[in-house]
Length: 121
Image (tube, rainbow, N blue to C red; front, side, top):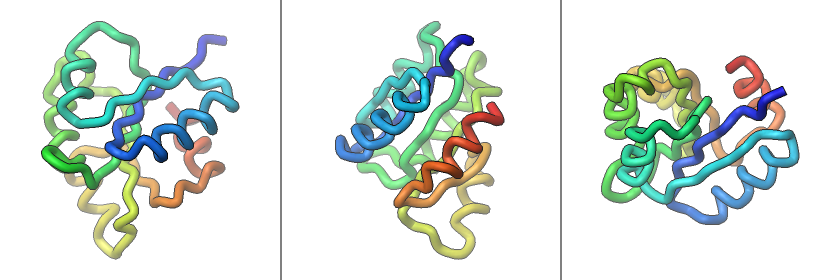
């Protein structure tokens, strides 16, 4: 079985570390970017990315701005994007989905729910 490759976009190294450790333990291959711009640059290449986890609250370019830009990259138009946010308030899920996210997961991340989302990809 080929490992699914997950791109984690988060400005907090601790979040990247925790998600990477969790997903690698479940046989996912992980790559990480510290900013949305770095991720956009990577996504314009031919690097394999099966699914994207993006923190919605980042300096410079947040997830709400980045997701539509990712969707505008031809070869990434159908890549599933999961919004990850600590702002788990009423309406946030809808806001994430309107921005183009496939689904939404709140922080602290429920690992079982995250794995359910990733296994559907």
